[in-house]
Length: 346
Image 1 (tube, rainbow, N blue to C red):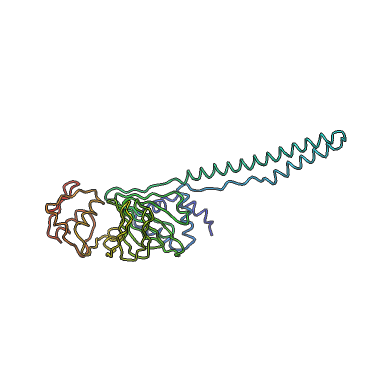
Image 2 (image 1 turned 135 degrees about the horizontal axis):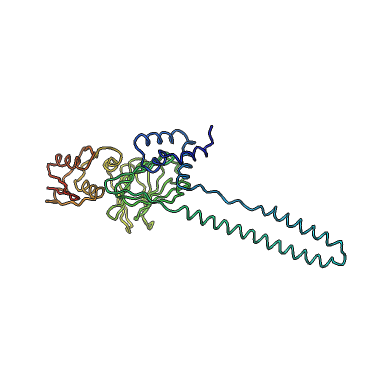
């Protein structure tokens, strides 16, 4: 059986594997590597190590200088010199003075060596801290990116959004990322002694044990919708918190102390990421329009604002923007037409 470290090293140089961990692999590659990491715990450990190597995180701890060995050598030299000098009785006191001085010098040397090692450790730690800098994954309008993690978890970053994380985050028992925009999370389960992942936004934090949910930070507020599992919400100044159940939505504004909870159909919020269709459940047209503006950078012109209160139920296949607006126009008996980056609704 091949050495796991050798396998990880080979994977870190594999173009297909690197595309997969960056969320840039094609459908076949994504399927292949997802199956591979889910096959065993050994594969997950190897994938994690390979991901770290690919990110340039192959750190080695500095070796501790063998102080005891050096001390014995110095002491032996000192005692040897001292014994030779004792042959001369007239030099006895003089020899002891020298020996004492040398012992003092040796003690100073030991302190210097330890101090040097401490300085070396500090410098090594500073260099590691510098290497463990933050990285960012970004998307533009109309784009989504899938990030596959070694434990089988998955993050789908929505359009015009970004995730920021420390390069050594996979090594941390509690993994932290910062989100601006929108993302869907499918996190592999973990024991409930402590959360596995924390999503930080401008408004607060979302602590995750293993679950499926979406987070949206557009419009100066954080919206969390839970599909499966359990998440804990905490506002930025820790003056309000809530634990969500499946089918609940939480909204809290940046700088606000309150959390507004509401029962929703989570498929309305997750289908945008996970399926080639959009699910509506008595959903106002205004919600869809807001999503189109956020994801495609559109501006909307509405002839009659009451049109935005029309409601949609059912599902619409979504392959491209024009086919979506055509389908919604037919369902609601309205006109939705694009003119460049402007969506005109009559």
